[in-house]
Image (cartoon, rainbow, N blue to C red):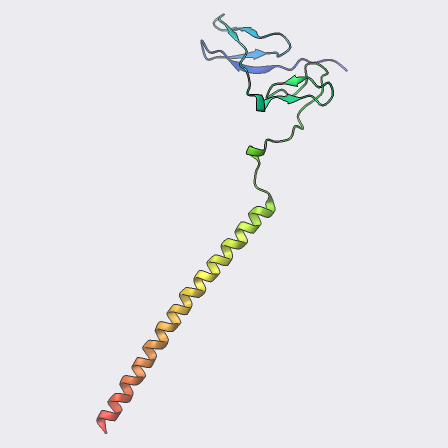
Length: 134
């Protein structure tokens, strides 16, 4: 198996243009556009991962371990970037539908109550008119 070196894309702070960078080479990088030297950006400690084969500490965005050439594309996703599970989404939809149904039921009940009271008052008025006409 041929050993491949992992390369990353890195932005030069002086000119803002993209450069290729190999973590195995070192920590100083010379921009191929403006010839300025700059240091490798240090990833946050939470972004570092460990190669499961050789236990090499690797920065973020590394897809192939430079030490053993193991492909790291099947890394677990971070908990903060986790998408909601399908069951959670379905549960939220069901709860929303239940609240909507309850709201519609309340509106229809109120409308029915108002209509019933209106009908009763009409009946009482007719009855009173009938009594007055006698």
